[in-house]
Length: 405
Image (cartoon, rainbow, N blue to C red; front, top):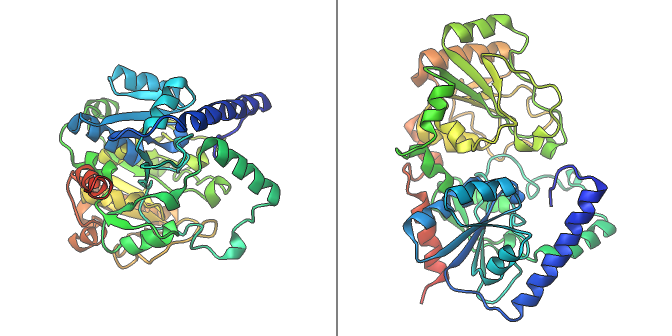
């Protein structure tokens, strides 16, 4: 699991809790069967409230009250926030959490199958890895073997011990994985690396991009009144162990002045894996680093007028909005894993390799948005459905398999 930086005392307390609650869950599993239509949801290793599981959870609560749905988290802030919104939520390491987990007949995770602990394999229980992105950059399953660090015998023992107390399921146990198009479906299958079916149903988290009702709109309009928002969302480097992506134009007064004169702000959103390595954060009135803010990425995309990325799959979500997309390949993949397929033909002339080229493309995108917006063919290639019905399609796919007669 990924827990970030822990002190020895914090690590000891965490391990003790895992042994305690893991043992309790194993014991209760012997006597308590799963309860039909009891679903639990988790995200981001238990740290936050976002991703596909968040949106499917809210869809279920709003549209299928006959299901007992609960969000499971390690964050007291998430539990409090959901409590204020009257949404069911329990802490993973709690008696309430264990009682809910042992009864769950469906487990939904987005970042990793460790988003929820103690949901051991059990009769009539199914698992759903909802994915935290569509296949684009190379992953462990597609990397050359010499680039994958071997796991030592001691580490294997630790992993097996942790699996016994925390969870015995993995992505390979998922009933299916969602894809947004027929083109991406085989790439998702390759990236997952297991014989898990792929269902082209769309990503539940993308429903919010096209939804009309949005309580966040006012907050963004107050923070950035009448501003064009250009957002830079690069992916991680070496799974968070590489160099933090440099902030464009931090030393360029002329570019910053152009942003002011054109009512434009450049938001910097580093990949979550890189945030812990950020030591020199630059922000002013027109270049604003929001990497450490607790913003849901989908809402950032929704209010973004121009997206800058590199080989992060975030651009695939953004395509649904039919707005300008720029690819800034400042390191030419020198410090990253590379892409699974070529997208140059889908976005002709939208690739930049230095700050000068990037600035020219930003100006073009702000002044003439359609010049750098994706074509209808490109959108259709990556999205079979351009609507806000992915949660419903995902739900129907689950029901088709889980409760068929």
